Image (cartoon, rainbow, N blue to C red):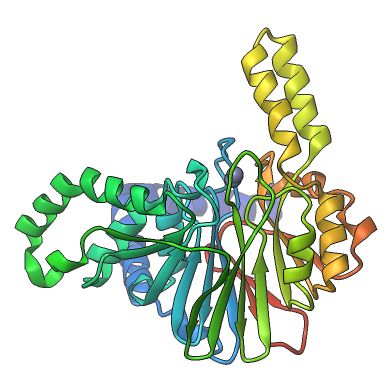
Length: 354
Ligand SMILES: [Zn+2]
Ligand SMILES: [Zn+2]
């Protein structure tokens, strides 16, 4: 055997020996990795890393009712001036917000755009994360169109038995009785929040037959974010988003959804085919969203509520064509993303789940 061959043999037997020892100790190694991860996760201070002069827009759910492994349903969170505002809380939103490390104890309110279930199914877990995770002393405040009060009452009733078990187990200091439940307030278009220089304005958008359906604009210190909610192409939205730093817009790709309708019809599923055809009329295409961003003079366009809710690697397909109508920066958002607005440059990007 040559000298080189011997070296390779020695190396391979060494590697096999180390591999064997590693395998024998795998539980100890995993335990150490777990301990380090727990310490890092529990000691994590995301807020300390967010510039207090900026508006931070977190994407806690970029999906839609069609299931996706990559995305929670509708949720956008805004961290501004030491307060957290959450717009919609679809399924998975509470868990995603918690994993992102956003401070649920600082929640000023959940603002519902409309009462399609993919926009509020995450409220139960979100309320629990806030109540038990931060010892919240007030019920979760919900604001939204007519019916929001009904949702608040219904959820409070539904989670009643669970709340009793939690209080009996952890005591009133950890889970204050006053912090359980949901407090619903029905709002109308206009200014719906105005405190400490933070102003939130609700406005009606077309999402028939869902009426009313709202979009929201948040303004603070000359900076702003506008959230479309679920909407077909909307002139009101273009007007309300005038000069906004960031337009967060929903999107539906009609060619892709039409292909799904045709596949459902081909496979003898006429009801699904009908739903895939129906939903095309009350959402905006990428080009239409681009036209709204352009008419508004928005400084950036961020897509959320992707229909279809494809894996992250395919988002480019869903938003194809938006750049023909809008020349500013465009981004299809992923769960965990944060865009930070300083009012001077294009919003900066990071992902809190990576
Ligand atoms: Zn929706
Ligand atoms: Zn909807």
